[in-house]
Image 1 (cartoon, rainbow, N blue to C red):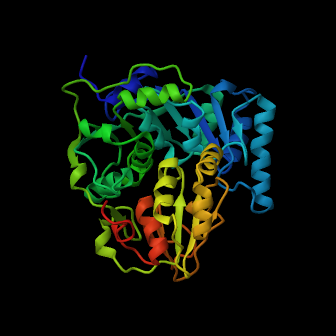
Image 2: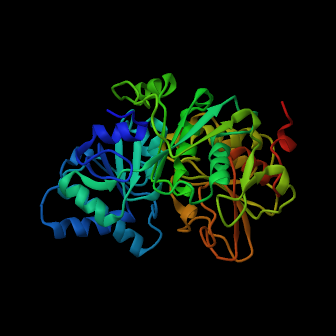
Image 3: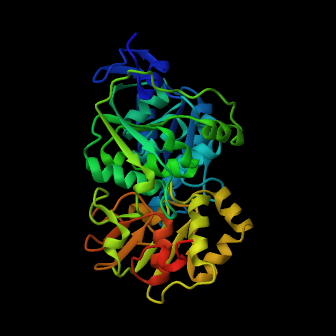
Length: 424
């Protein structure tokens, strides 16, 4: 048998039929099917049209109200009701509404539904976030997911693999966000097309699980089909903490074939900022020093974690948000929100002048609760900065880690975090 990459091994373990070789078509069964309040209603109507009557396995279906939750208008309320009714009709207990869940990709891991060797099918492009956990998250359209709901399997093209070898230890104020911005800067927004990004090497151990999520979440911004990290003692321990039965990680075979290999020395990375209108436009934060900002947004499906909130609170402790800046902070899940409350982080953020939100995708995708006006500039820990992504097409969005975003909130302009905190 030919040597396999991590991606190929996980797919092979879930294959119903077909060869697991790059470019081949294989039918794959998922461990979890994940839908939200935007992708779900269309999938539900298509599922009804298929006529199977019952989903393949209600225990392996997760429904999350996050994009327009809490509902911002009547149309949003109807979408949330559609999701609620589908869950009730089919006995799907993993349905999470406002106040009970959070943003789907962060929540899925939190509730112990993804771990070593798993596959998640989701009707959302950032399903690749599951790669942080030595798993595969693969995004499909709503109609595809209707078939997955009915049959518990889908066909897909087997991707090639791109190996990203991490070495060294990050300097202060450098995070997983900077790692993925560097990858996208090097290969471009289409460099990962028809491929899975595989992260490994000794530098992986320098990244906590929250930071691995930040990396995996933006694999799709390089055009990748999926992303997967090597598992290690950290990810194994994390499975146990999330209430999962621990199991060995899936690792690549020696001699596995990759379309491309690249190496990133974490110790050589500065904090990066992606200029609009592409996540591929990463430059050192120093390059953009003095760029005025009107809004700072800290949150989203991977950068609303406790790690991000602690970083932001360290910058904002005892300081104030600049008078002309709006700071919006969005913990990714209800559990994270409550933990941040218990640690006093929310009080620090609010005292500094931040508006702290209930968990929601909100402004990240241009839905609500933080939309930009024409000519305004934001710096955000989100994953996309396309024109019109967070509001008016004449607004500008810069992408950064939480240290950099929080420093900009205080300074009123983009500055290195060391300007606020020093180098210690």
